[in-house]
Image (tube, rainbow, N blue to C red; front, side):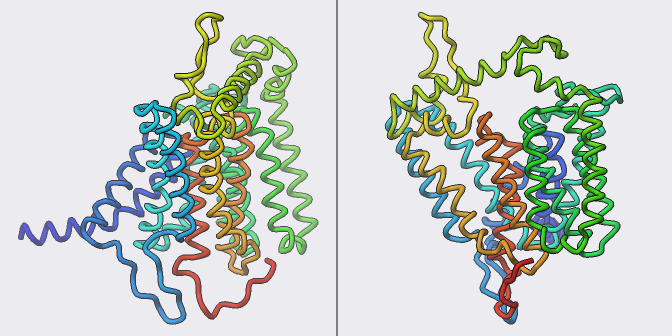
Length: 429
């Protein structure tokens, strides 16, 4: 009896990965603590699967490619180059404790595509469900931020009550993703799903107005247009409806933008001191510029292998002049250059470009699901660049969970078991 119970428990545990992956997606918009817990459980589940020897892929069906147990080799090669160059930087910099802690934190996040791959193989329906779980999470985030503003439309730098301090960055990823999901559903004639994603997009807009991150207020419209451009051919049959919908959305978002006081976030850049919170004129801009200069100076002093991962706070600042050390360079690319030099930057670029090289040829896939995930991956890469120009987002957990999960989904769609030897040649969508 006990043995039977153990066997059943082990069987249930094997199926838990897709659940943990779904919890990661759902909570990743509004609850940093719950998200980190979900990811940790997903990580432990993967170890359990591998120890039990259940990681081998199922036999391919008729007309299908054999399924690799892991993401494509090119992605692993990019990860290997990244790891080796950063190890070299740690050894050259000499700050071993900080270096290995920093690299370990990055690698912990970089396991996500492998963990997602195991979960998708256990339950392929887990992949399309991610869009719906993110949408539900956005609705929760909107409710939490609206509550923070006492149920008024205000620009108050809302973070949400459950610990997402990176809400603006996450919304920059979610808004184009929900736009693509909405377009995919409407073009397929799925009105209920379209209404659901439309509501999620409205929720994301409300959360953005409450959070009023300037970077996201600028990036979200650009990335929304990017997704519309991706779907331009199938949408050409619905020009009038599309233009009417865009006009209504523009009026609604524009009205909310000015009514909430979000416009004042931009007058801060010109020295407006009337913003709630009593910020000094140009304070955040001055801090960023100072951080960029410090980071660039460290790179110039250590151009080949950098000061070492995690070493920036240890090598910046000057007590004699009153200059404080900085935790990061407030810019992802300068930060990587400062800490790992040109060698580490090469590994960093290989890590991000390897999946793009695999995804890019499928940008005109006739399969709606593949088309969606490919363009979603391209959109989150653009947001990584936009956000990375003003903040150190590489290693930001909530941001990178979404980034790597979308990337893993796109890789699965273009090289996983859904690929069929007999499918038609890809044509423009």
